[in-house]
Structure formats: C-alpha cells, structure tokens
Amino acid sequence: MTVALPTGTGRRTVRAALAPIVDFLLPCACIACGSRIAGGGLVCAPCRGRLRAPPAPRCARCDYPAGTGDRPGRPCLECLEWPEALSLARAAVALRPPADVLVHGLKYEGWRELAPMMAELMERRLATLLADLEEHVVTYVPTSSAHRRRRGYDQAELLARALAGRTGLAFAHLLERRRQKRTQVSLHPQQRMANVRDAFSLRPGADRLHGGNVLLVDDVLTTGATARAAAETLARSGVRRVALVTFARALPR
Ligand SMILES: [Zn+2]
Ligand SMILES: [Zn+2]
Image (cartoon, rainbow, N blue to C red):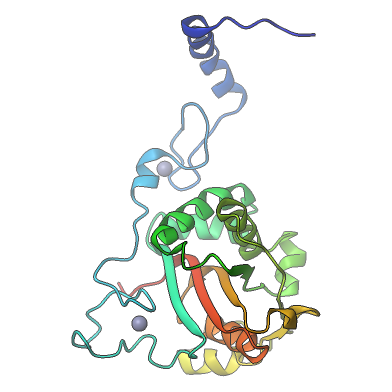
C-alpha cells in the first residue's frame, strides 16, 4: 500500500506532529550524558561540541601536543623511537569526556552504531592529508580473539570499514593478533612494549602490499606501543609507509 504524504509545509507539519510519538516509541538518550535527544541520534549536540582535537601546537609527525619539555625544532620525544615506517599519526579527538564514554561504549557496551559517527570525525581530522593518503590501503589494529568472541565484533575494524567507506580507500584485513600473555592495562610503558612486541602476525596474502602504504586504524592511541608493534609487523612485510589514525588520543591531565 502506498500512502500519499503531503508535500512542502504540509509534510513538515506532519513530521512535527509525529515527533512526540516517535520520541515516545523510540526514546533516545545521549550515550554520553543521558539527556534526551529530540528527533533521535546517539550523541547530543552539546556532547558533540565537547569532542575536541588534541590541543595545538602539535608534533607534525605524531600529533602529540607540544610542551613536553622539548624546544621548538628539537625532535619530539613522543615519537623519537617510533619505527621509521610509522610516518604519521592523527587522532580525531583528545581522550577526554565525553570521548572516553564513546570509546568505552563502542568497545565494551555493544554500541557499534557509534562507529560511523566516530569515523566521520576521523575523516574530518584527516581532511587536509587525504590527497597524500590516496594510495593507502585501510586496515586496523585487531583486538584479541577473546574480546572479539565476547563482543561479536572488533571495534577497530568497524572504524576502519566506516572510514574506508567514507574516503573511498580500499579496505583489507592485514594483521592478526597472536595470543597475548598479559593484559596491557596495568603495565608500565616499557613492559607494554615488551608485552606487545610479538603481538601481531600478518594474514595470508598481506605480503602483496610490498612497497605499498597503509592507513592503520585503531580506537585509541595511548602509549603508542601497540601501534608501533603493528607498524613494525607491516614494515617487516615490506609496507613502505604506515599512517596511523585513531578516534582518540590519551593525553596527560
Ligand atoms: Zn550528551
Ligand atoms: Zn612526535
């Protein structure tokens, strides 16, 4: 059955009249602050407004805000020891409220619907770089298989697929996570590095990317140990350049 809807002003009036019913049937609360969102959506406008890029000025390579003790012109201490192949990192937002709630929601609470919105912010952050990233293949830092089994999805993969869809870049599964000995959470940076050094292996066929470039996607950049290990694994297979993009970046308080 086809229902003829009124046009123009009439249609807007109908939509306005139906809005309270839609809100009643599909109550929408902001994932971050719990306030009601009229007309639907996952995150309210004020919370979206609080999602900010890491503060400038930032390191041109790793995006870390300057002021960590290094003088202008000196190499940034944050990315000094990064593998050469890891040429660039960008984060859409600083890991501060409400970004932390969104990261947690996507990773642990099954809010996979957040991925498109988070990928949109990542694409925006990359906007001026997209011409340089044209030849890059999008892949992701895989989560542990236990986490994937528990959640039914990999949050970084969702972000990577959404970002590839938005940018038109090719998507490929390139990395696999080996069984991890210990969780990263309670470890010091040095221990983290040792813990993740052999965390990844290449999927069959990934060596086809020899000489190519990769845009590596993850949800959060914390110490960089995991991203470094992933980039090193890709570099060992002959990937020339790895650009990392995350939704959020942890910064000192
Ligand atoms: Zn909110
Ligand atoms: Zn840096």
